[in-house]
Length: 288
Ligand SMILES: NC(=O)c1ccc[n+]([C@@H]2O[C@H](COP(=O)([O-])OP(=O)(O)OC[C@H]3O[C@@H](n4cnc5c(N)ncnc54)[C@H](OP(=O)(O)O)[C@@H]3O)[C@@H](O)[C@H]2O)c1
Image 1 (cartoon, rainbow, N blue to C red):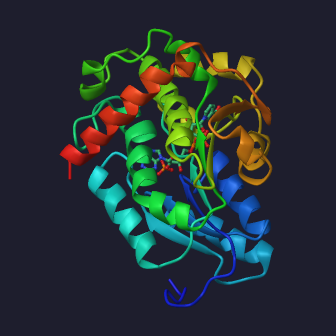
Image 2 (image 1 turned 30 degrees about the vertical axis):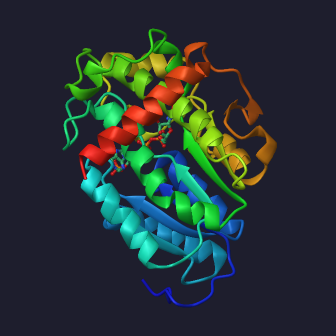
């Protein structure tokens, strides 16, 4: 990386997870075009390079986009990613918790259910590790890409199941739980950050034609297509709205189609959000 860590950095800085493809790729590209220096955190430098090249080509710059290694299914990798970013001594104005998987079954390296561990717990830890920098960079934002799939998790959180391998046949039930956790996390984070100048948003991007469905059984995919899929460009719009336009006074809320949307009753349960926050804190501490 050719950013000088000791230089004073006047541009706004964002870190986006899962930006090599899909919604994250478009988000990274548009934020760079809006003037942000972009850190693209993901699993493969090689698969992220095309996006970095695209950013540099369209912004006519050569040091606006950088790769950070991140495997959200391994909390040690999350710590390493945060440490690499923090070592740059840059501000952080926008964290976009975008990466996600659906339908991949099993457990993360530290034994959490795969969707919960990647979609929620990895992002929970990453956010915690970057909080002080976000606060020091205020006004700043944390945008978490959740999903309408949280509606499937109407029974709430089955705590023991979160530390076991995926049990459902398709993994979609666990995906719904992980997306409920995203909304609860963003809502409680807003409370924890009240008065700091850091605001938080969660959102449903729409049903988007991306690779997120690659692990789902073949028989489910035609059902998705029947619903009319958005392009990744269209799917990135609500993330970009939250990142660039949503007011700080709406911190903690959930968005759909670039508008505030009331999530499920259980996703509004402040006590459950607090419980998830404290449990997640304990889990990531226990793994350090
Ligand atoms: N597409 C939809 O219809 C839809 C609907 C609602 C919500 N969402 C949410 O939107 C977000 C973006 O998804 P997308 O649709 O753009 O899907 P996508 O094209 O599959 O992109 C997902 C990104 O997440 C990354 N990722 C997956 N597992 C990871 C891990 N263990 N560690 C680090 N990165 C990981 C992927 O990296 P690799 O390329 O290395 O796998 C990829 O960059 C997700 O949170 C998803 O749940 C999508």
